[in-house]
Length: 384
Image 1 (cartoon, rainbow, N blue to C red):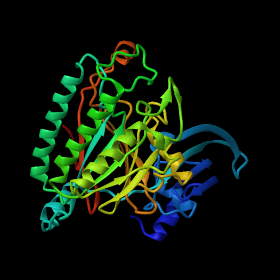
Image 2: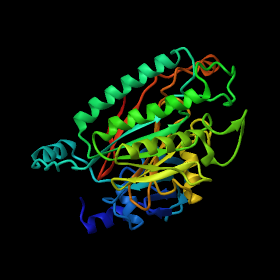
Image 3: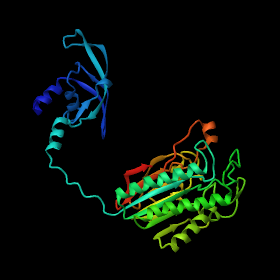
Image 4: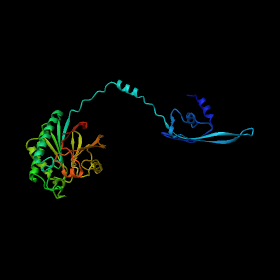
């Protein structure tokens, strides 16, 4: 690098006019006119009092024009000289990154101690859309009962391995088919309404029994479109008049009589969503008929601004759309945790009307995940 005096002599050798606009990240030379071709931009940088060790030219932005000018010499003769004009952008130099050195330093670093996992763990099972009494391509009530027995057996095996200190049963709704659900065709059920509700209560109680063997159970249940009190597509009464919630109230009586340690969390009479604290994590539940396909997170955002039941939750569970889904929904300003949305798969006998019109179908499954003292455990998420 030339000395300051050498740099000054070098800059003085070129007669230069023009303008330099400097921004925090770089800048631009505009109409820089010289009497000599520019071969070293460090000269130009120094002329504008910029350090060439800090700035560099963006090569593909340089444009040059050249013309000739006649000039009278001291003895009266005329001489032709070349003139040059430049325009170019420049940026601040970035420090070079030595990747081999960085990897070598990373390998040389002592291994980090891995902290033991949290002791307390809650395993959560999501019962979603069994629509008991419905017939479809996967069969009817006999096939559904067999499927539910299989899911309970798989859940028992998972619980045996995970050894939670408490458990949770999240009922996402549509526990039975009903006769006033607005489906087309209607009245294809193989159970009466009373039988549907009886079977639903039995399935909830049996699932509760599997979970209760591994710790106290938090039960969350919400109203839904199939189990609503309705006449055709017209919903009657308040959200709390849902027949599925009525079944849960009866199951609670039996569980209390049996001495089970289970706590029910139901929405307020005019609410359709509910939230509960499980091991320090706020978990929210809503059926999903409140919003369109793929709009769960947008709906949640509005609930947050409206200070609704799920406004402060870290984890939102939905059902209704009969297929698994997941997404990240920003960060909770109250807990600092990343928010998660999970859409539960169905347990029903198949939605043939949607398969024939939409061309898609989804496998039935029981969504299971854990909550620890650190919050939602993504690595535990599975579908049985």
